[in-house]
Image (cartoon, rainbow, N blue to C red):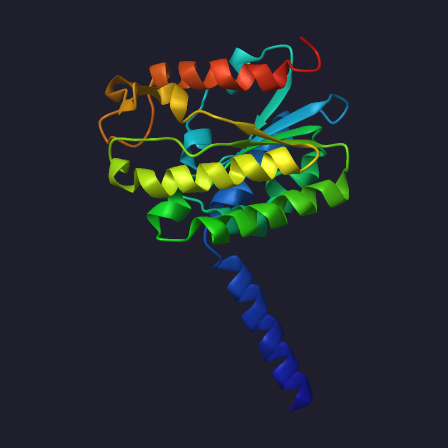
Length: 217
């Protein structure tokens, strides 16, 4: 009976892991990323939700760098925490850009709880490599979630303060660059009002490049 219970528990654990949200997608991302990753080169990882996943020309925008995009659409910060090894740590990056919090706010999570999860993520990354540079990309404004702008702004303030107070953590503000006198630039989005078009990513590039080339212009 004891062995039967152990076997049953093991089977339940395996099934739970297999059925964890994004498991299939993460396996596919890892498989694709493994096929293009050169372990001999310095690596920069971009990860997070769909705003990263849909940034298809990241490598082309920084051709002299090795850029890995492990974004997975619809993810929240807790999902990234669960898959941190597969999506980030397995590639031993020197720099990591994280975009999470957007979907967390939409799921009615509190900014302080989101930051707690993000802090767990950055602590895990720093434990593996204390020299790793981590850039937290601010939550972006969008047409479809403009009604939540107050909560997004609170989250961004918390992330910004955390970056100021923590060595090796930086904050990339894309929120304000997507506004014009506090009004949203609506021409930056595709028809769903949430995801960005090339104009939106052009703005992100102008912010992100200052972090990519900060030490090696």
